[in-house]
Image 1: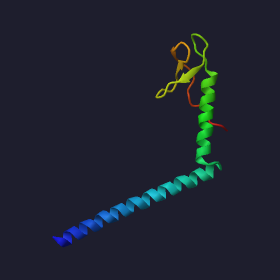
Image 2 (image 1 turned 90 degrees about the horizontal axis):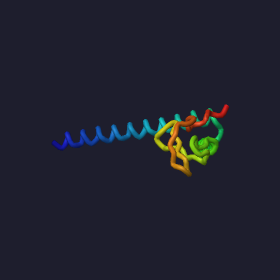
Image 3 (image 1 turned 135 degrees about the vertical axis):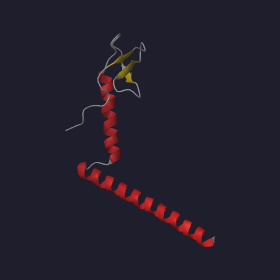
Image 4 (image 1 turned 45 degrees about the vertical axis):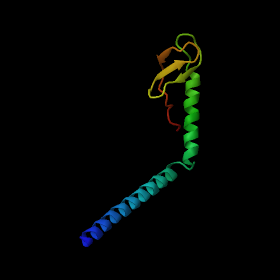
Length: 99
């Protein structure tokens, strides 16, 4: 019975080590690909995208009263007016990627 327990423990350790190695290789590959396509850091890219999304929402005005709008999370094209709370369809929230 002791031999079975030891064999089972070795199999569990081997599986965990395999998973750890696979995760590290995957993260390394993602980092290499990101570094190869854009010299900026990932958090800089995210900040730029968030700023472009905010600018997109600033350009969209309420269809009813012309007031400022906020994007509705979980939707692709829904906006809500900050003044009259009217919900309407508009352009996609995600701006076109920069060239």
